[in-house]
Figure 1 (cartoon, rainbow, N blue to C red):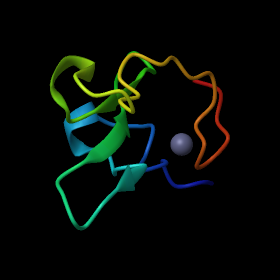
Figure 2: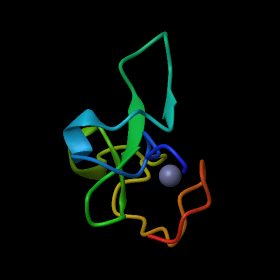
Figure 3: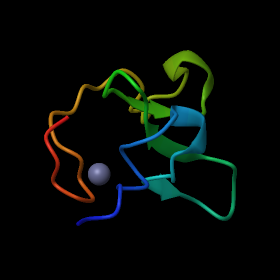
Length: 64
Ligand SMILES: [Zn+2]
């Protein structure tokens, strides 16, 4: 049986980041409503992905 995906299961606070940079604290997670969420405040920058809804986990392919 497959291990629970660390990116799309569990509490959003405990999920692994989909992407992060080492030069800053920027990171992206899948939140519990299956929206992408980054750690920038309220999508305050042009490249923010905040609020983009996804249907499948990009890491394990699971339908969300
Ligand atoms: Zn997943």
